[in-house]
Image (tube, rainbow, N blue to C red; front, side):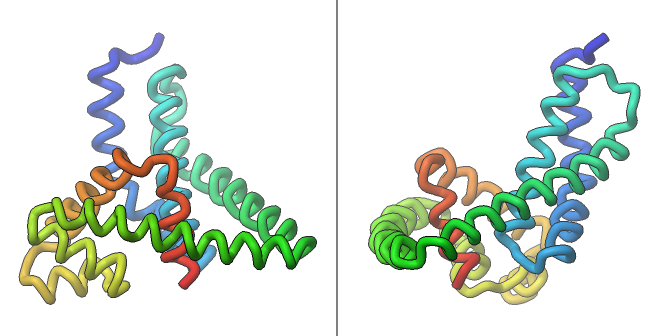
Length: 180
């Protein structure tokens, strides 16, 4: 029997709050890539949400999270390796793609800057410190004299705003910032 939607949603929210940082740090410790860690977290919780919606909960969600995390991380790493292998086979295309990506990046950055400018001042500052200055949440919290949880909330809301406007181009933005 599948759980009612509100029970699954409540369970998911609890699991996300309890486990998202653990999944992130697991992936980060294995790859040393914030991009891969963030991608892994997103995919893990999408799969978990799907499991909560469509499957009987015979296996505890925490066990599912561990299994899903390993599987998703391996999938993401395989995708990155395939992309790297393709770029190595066609170096002139890779260079052309990088040139195009630089142009797209500049246009995208201008649009993201417009979105950031529309955010509340504190959210703007937190987002810029995190994504442009590469400060971690603890450093930002100390610098701005706010809680780490407040920093997390500002980042989550800022990313949500950007995702809504740029869902089809967000990968480019994240890829560029995690490669530089």
